[in-house]
Length: 226
Image 1: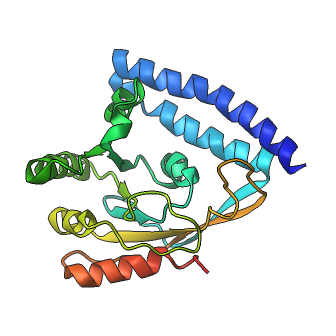
Image 2 (image 1 turned 135 degrees about the vertical axis):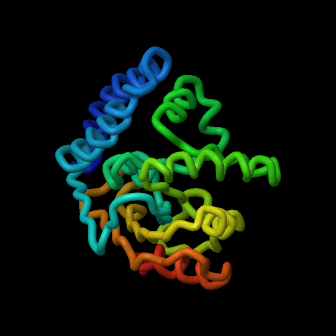
């Protein structure tokens, strides 16, 4: 049954993805201001496929504040990245530079609103990132980052990337840590039915020392890691 459910999921989701992703790229070229419905629709369609084909439901706990804040999410699978537009209201993700080099995707991501992370280009790149991020903050949009830098197996607690504290300091935003336990269900190949929980932790105020904010975020995003 699990294999059959997965095959149906892949058939339905990737068929739908051709439409949503293709339209995102097309609209980015001809009418960038109308891009948003397609990434948002893709994320919503993913949730529908999870529930109806895989038997995976998503539960949110804790308090999710509205408006501009830096949401720091645990990253255990592709689920978190695809689900961002459903989890948050018009989020602005920090995304690796390599993703913007994917034909079509990069143009759509810029039109939707993303901050390009250039890890190896020093202070100039950081200033550009912060300038881009502040434009979105002024419009009240939430920012989203995976502070561990990449997907990690469930149950592991790697340190946060060194750049997270610098972003926190320069933006001056409250941080909302988000614990996610998608790893045991949302496997790379055979996904399993169950409940994925997203827990929004206590808001962390801006202006804390680096060691304190890193420790608090690290502890909070691993709250579902047992």
